[in-house]
Image (cartoon, rainbow, N blue to C red):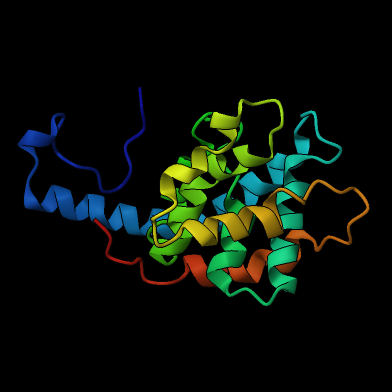
Length: 190
């Protein structure tokens, strides 16, 4: 038997919900959003346990990306993008960019969320084991207004951040940025 919280909805099917029920849900959702920075930080910490094929673990990779963004004087949106762009790697390896893009979408500019959502396609450019057609699949976005931003994100921060010798900032260094970005009022997006 599941223990009910102090305030729970009255329905077992949403179509039977009342206005009060949906107010309870909205209040719960607001509390969930307030906990998001802590959840993201915890998930990033878990990425240190990665047993992947790279010379560094997934956490070190995203920290290196965020360090490069920070040292390039990128704004908070880009630093968070660099830090969280691979958040979906373990749970959604084929669509990890879309997962990360959806997580950040309400808190960063559209351009930044778009780049994170599509960075996997742009990263294929560097994979010499792929056919020329697949490597250049980013070309499908050549006329998109954020195309160059995605090229730059991958070239300057993502593809070059697998270096065990790079002087990388710590997760603690980025906690204030995470808290600032996810402490904002969410953007209205479709």
